[in-house]
Image (cartoon, rainbow, N blue to C red; front, side, top):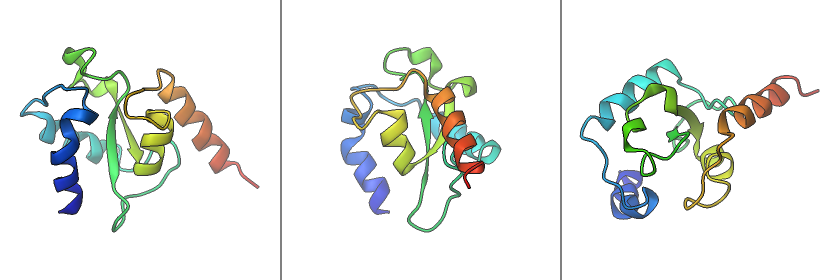
Length: 111
């Protein structure tokens, strides 16, 4: 509930002023059912540990990609801000898929 309120209050700033499609909730749900874990660190959804659906290319820059599954990647809260947005929601990581794959490979192979 608190998270939804936060997102509602700050949504326009986070989205670069763009307005979400009314189809976004269903696309997000389908994506999370297909990719239920963070694709960068492997974290699973847990109480107070939510997962985000990140747009690899921000949809406010290309609105046609908002609902395109090939433009989506699942990230936990930590990886979303750190890897997906390079620690600022005003930025985005054009190499997010490669960076997520590399980090997950390192985590899986750690000693």
